[in-house]
Length: 378
Image 1: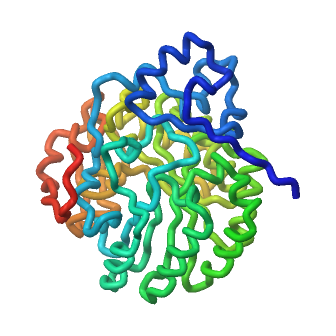
Image 2: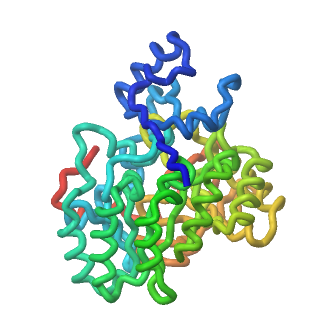
């Protein structure tokens, strides 16, 4: 098999398809928000279309400088129990193992990680591993960041082998957009596939939590990566926010659900975009998001309809069951306060974009007190 090398670009001036005028305009944005892409992903862009959704995913835009949101809208800084390890929900721990991605999505809810003054990811995962070892209620661990599959295979081997030495950890999740950012990294790396093959068993499975936002990302190369992961014993699921100008069209989302199901990738979550600094131009009202998702689900099979629409709020994952006649019908799908399944009916103004925008939402949760010794970001 011929090895296809992917070239990474971190200087906007090196993107040959942009005009000199465009590059000059974008320098201010890349000075505030990190920029990174690769030549494979750039090849998916229709450069004749200034509104091309793949372009909007990774090429900066002036809208990122609009005043909006904050760096940590879901209060992840409150979840750290030791450096590099978050424990928000009882059975799940997160290891922040990387501050790098295959490319930087412009809507990213962890843009803070790519700032020079923030150090959340840890090269030394020993404190996190020890915490997990001492908490037998944790049965699944998510490796995230940044992108877990940007790590070298040797580094991944160390982490995965360490987790597999902890008997109560049954599931290891790899949070990654690499299956569509750089699929060759997966199917050309037999060492990675053998690692998955060794440690993804019938009783202790490895999941790849993919981030696929648009059906055009599902290329022949991406499908080859899915197939390689499946053949190695991994289970691949997908999650994406509903993003203005990228996938806010029932036909697009419906096609995404279909193409994921056809490729054997489970549609897992549709998310409401978090109110993160720089994200103003990607945001939609909650009612609009709900209607887009329902119309998309109407176009697909029951396999596509497995997806859940949720908000990753400070208090938990809040599933949007329905928005009708000015009211939002909500349920805690996950809960920091162990209020799983708690049902809420709240007024939903037409311009509401987040749980906190719903009148009366403050009665249903309490802002968490930090359990971390790590300085807060805000």
